[in-house]
Length: 168
Image 1 (cartoon, rainbow, N blue to C red):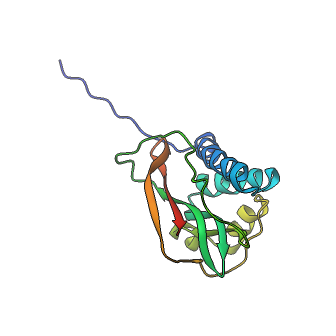
Image 2 (spheres, rainbow, N blue to C red):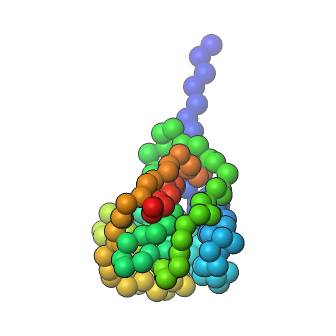
């Protein structure tokens, strides 16, 4: 007797909210260590990420502190949807040693190719459901410092691969 099965994965709003909650937990730890972002900002960023993930409209997002347009400490999430080798780690382990004196809180987001292919009315519909207002800009740079990687958050074939940059 031969048996075969097919399993399909559908990334849902629930999956997107789950991944966004992992990011929110990281942001809450940043708040604990550095005083920002605010609770309201964390909620808004989580809503934004959830909406963009479920619509497949985000490629990468960064949250952190910058000084003179260079990151001092930043957490970066790269979106992967290839389903290969995905793990779902616990959130946390944000570095507590960054000197953010004189630095300002910031976030930078890159939309995906899916976003680029949408017509303006669809982009407007998505943006109207997001509480974060973003403006065009240039990604902050990186000075002398280093990256630590190795954490990822995944659900149903989509992952956020996390990297943390800390300046020296």
